[in-house]
Image (cartoon, rainbow, N blue to C red; front, side, top):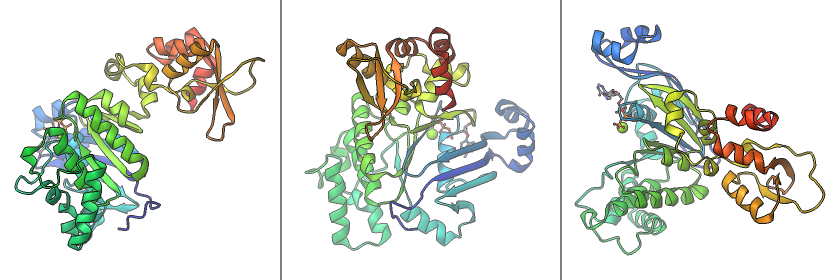
Length: 366
Ligand SMILES: Nc1ncnc2c1ncn2[C@@H]1O[C@H](COP(=O)(O)OP(=O)(O)OP(=O)(O)O)[C@@H](O)[C@H]1O
Ligand SMILES: [Mg+2]
């Protein structure tokens, strides 16, 4: 498969089921009829891994899969490069049905279209940093000189220049994960699968790695599937987030949708400590631009967080702002009191009882 950035490398998961056990097919019917994971295990000794998963992951975006331990995150991501065969359903990557690939096509697909970053780094201990970083290129059969050139470039990008000759055990965990990331990026695959890639790192290093990834992504625009059990990480990294519980998607959407309208108590409980002002952007609650009062106006671009919008309003001594698009055209307006109401209440419906039901309804319809 070519790796032209203009290619569409979106991932479509459709009606995917995975049941572990000898009579998985027979169990599907039971699950379709509503049998729970616990019951399937206790009565039939089969494990429900995934149930009717439908996720459309857009090309060039970061799709986060979040859920507690055992919810099916790794099982799901391993279907994308067919390390696991589904019991039922479809996995379409870049328009190609992964389940219909011949062994040869599958090998080429894994070699050129997908790279993985693992939680436990998975570096080869007897190879130097550079030798680890060239690994995927070796497998692709690239000429040695070019391998080294590309790998050195990525090692520099992840901040490891000067460490090329070190061995993994001479590096900290954060540095080892940078090697893992450089190795994955060197292969130039358009899809990056990251299974709890940053989970073993301590909090500050982890934030650091998130920043490295987000910075790189602005340029590389890969289709990234990022697994985490950490909500803060999910909200920071994900363009879209899907939340799994017991093998089922309980909610999926943007970070704003999840924080503003949690689908059930389980998710509401997850998001209740979140700093809403940082997660929610002005576009989620603005009303269409009509006009502003004469006098000074404050304009902020789409994507501005509520927290920074409030700061700027307070600094300017104003109580309303105008939201502009990338061309600087006004597209919406928003009052200080609506921003504050959204920041202090826990759901959109509560906020709508306080102020401006119209704008909140528009936010929901968006
Ligand atoms: N090979 C297998 N055989 C039987 N059951 C399995 C197998 N692999 C996974 N499972 C079961 O499928 C479910 C989902 O497991 P999975 O590893 O996908 O969870 P996870 O969300 O990645 O968890 P963690 O956060 O701990 O990595 C679990 O109940 C697990 O026991
Ligand atoms: Mg896992």
